Length: 572
Image (cartoon, rainbow, N blue to C red):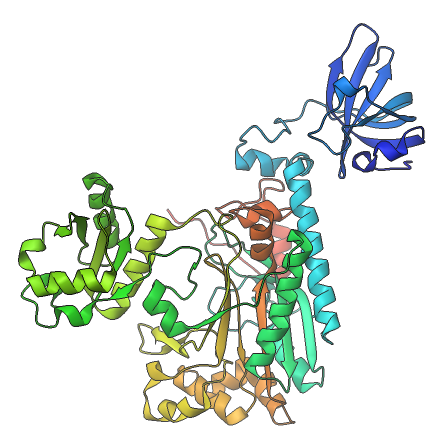
């Protein structure tokens, strides 16, 4: 039906007869029998000159047959790629009429998100959404090409699996064949890709759909896409190289420039310097160790295991109301309070200055490299709390929008194997229970020094967003059983839930390692979006609803009976 796309025509096409199809983006009358139509398709917009009175309204779907001609110089539109030409219509065919759209499709109008998602098929016509989906497609293509260049084979893993403890709640699917039993939808293909390694598929990858029943936010949806990869006979260094190549290739496909080698930082350093395991390194405001300065202090608020501070350059003009607000936030995050000091004429101006010795003040200024006009923010508490609170505080004060300041990739390595213990005293894996501990730390497992065990795990961070995680996997049954035992998973339960994996290890499992990162998150940042919903064709709202299809919704009694289910009445 068409010979060309609207946005592809250029001055070099002058004199050609073309057939175009698209939507009426805008109509402008010029006299009684002449109209200018902006015809839009996925590639862009072209101006069409229509002679004769015709009822062509916004969002009508047209086929235009005509000739490309150069616009008069005074009517050239430099803001669009087709601005030097127009199409003189010789035949106009209305393929579909349209009612007025529920909201304007220009980018100048802010639209309620629920309204946009309820009419997503209209929203997708907007230039912003067309651009984002095109970027997503290019990212997917570049990732696939990069993985295949490195010898990876794409393998699809199942969507209906057994429920496994992976940190978030499963979405479950009732079985009609076995009433009372359920499938789970995969939170990740983790076990299956490890079984691919046992099966000799020594370099696996998949752009996989994963589902997790967890609270939604700007970088999280119930269902999401991830680049999932696993390789045999490799080290951590090999995996970092594989994934770096793929991510940098995708970035180059969108930006036209290949970023330099991705730096790395240990988990411990990230926590000490930035108070986060996903540090945003685009800006300063780093955490500075101050504990030794106050070992003999008489200021009771500083009689704490750890004291750290942030220097805010030229921050002394921050108002007292703002400082009070920041103090309250720190308390909400778990701190006992926040100490602030303004550097004025070489002195520390603060309500607590009188409680500090001259030696402490001098050491504080020297350690923080202060200058007049600076603001100092200090927190004293347990080390984990200090890092956590100051990490959030530096983001509150200085973090730029996620799309500003360039692209700052970072590998974070050497995570702890366990991040804490639950209410029942069982340790919680920092990643997942299939992560190999550092060889030299395995004896700590046996001695019970669980929080001192390091894992061979690594995260990829971009502009403060965690793109994904990976690790060297456990491939020996005895070590996997030891980890299960430490986690409070008894042998019988482990065999019931993971028997197929443990049994597979009996038949020759190669050393292997892997990684997975969120395609939605990477695409959002490359597209300049703050929310992954803007790069997903049909996302859920913040509450998890789908205004387009009204999901989730009840199912009828007949269906429930087939599945052997009964629904409890709503809680009052």
